[in-house]
Amino acid sequence: MKYIQSINAKLDFLNHNVNIDLKGRNLILTGKNGVGKTRFLNQLNNTVLSKLIHDIPHIFQHHYMQKVNIINILKSETSDLENSFYYKNHIENLKNNINPLNLLNFLEELLGKSDSYNPQETEEFIKKATELKNIILEYKTFLQNSNLNYLPIHSPIYNIDYLINEIGSTHNQENISLAVNGIGNLNQNIQASKVTFNFFPAHRQSQITPSTNTTDLNQYINSAKHEYSSKLGQFLEQYLLNIRIEKSLALSEENDNEHADQIDSWFQKFDEDLKFLFEDESTKLKFDYKTRKFSLMQSHREFTFQSLSSGFTAIFDIYSDLLMRSRLLNILPNELNGVVLIDEIDAHLHISLQKKILPFLTKSFPEVQFIVSTHSPFVITSTNNDTVVYDISSGEFFEEDLSLYSHESIIKELFHVKEENENIKILSDQLLQFIESENLTQDLNTIQELLNEINKDFEKLSVELQLQYMVAKNKLAKLKHEAN
Figure 1 (cartoon, rainbow, N blue to C red):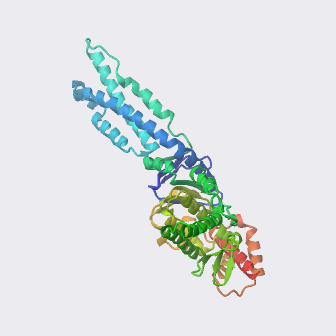
Figure 2: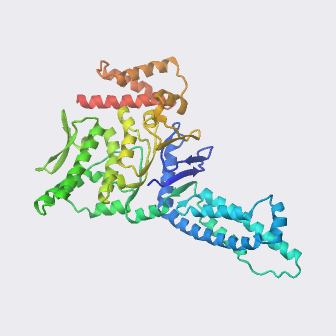
Figure 3: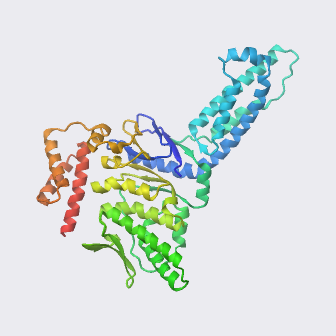
């Protein structure tokens, strides 16, 4: 289940408020360089860890009980008010035809959302409850002034201010506030350890340690249950060894074919994911039983997890961590839920992988709510209606399916890229020729000199040319690596 319904923020580095109506969808953050996407994600991560996991479930319960008490008091007092001559002949004129019963019904409707936490709705509840309280107090004042025999008695109505203050004292005063649905489900999943909350920074690399021998998994399981910031992906190869040997023991010691088949199915799914990520149908996992080590096989080469390029290490840092969490929590990847934040999801990735990375993650972990930042139009146009886009520079919010847009229109309309001068166009054309060429005829040293020239004024360049630079740089590094 995807919990966050909206994000509202007042940030000192932006000149506008942030209002993102997620409705349980994934989010792509974009914007100009230096606008504060990373700062926003860091603050959002702190809010998720402190509020969503710990505070909001408890605040919700506290608010709910106080709101029930407020409604019960107002309902009792409104019943007396409704039958009075004062209400029928005076209060409607005084309050511009505000109907106390309508106010009461509105409060009960807000209370009826018993599985959600919404700071804006709490503010609205307080406003309407105060309004109805004031109508009732005016009625009591009228009775006291117009009836000499009226004896004022203590009324629970005077307790409402205290109850409202109780709600206000625990009301979210953070720079970033979250509206959350499914709090009961969230609590259950936290207790059952079926949830994860992760933040992957821009400069990430998977450091998968080589397998040595079977190990006790309890330490890893405890980390998966209680330490959301721990990096479990580094133990992927060790875990592969454990379950490989577990399969052998299941067959030899217990003749448990069902369990062995489950492990085989898991390895088969892992191989399918490898084929997708490496864009090579020959890719598969290889195990050497003598050395107890794993390697990755393709038709033309064999390599290890430790020798992956920067692009693939960036992907495996995310993928292997979430995959390990689901396995260690003894649930399927499509059962894992929570919130995962990724800064610069396109970092180090070739264009073809930029197009695939977010759909791959959302398909592999469909119940996880992904919130990512990017400069890449290829990431943005890879999405569907399950993902929205927010431009933190301008405050623009895009709900439509941007996969229907061309990369050029995204660059010009979303990134507000203006026409470049002639020299920039020449540089851009040279980069595109290199990026798109399959049969390379250009000298790699010439390309390196071109990249060095562009890098001198990198921060002043358009997002489009910066993107071309990064793609060309990655391709050049890959070609040099293959040449060696």
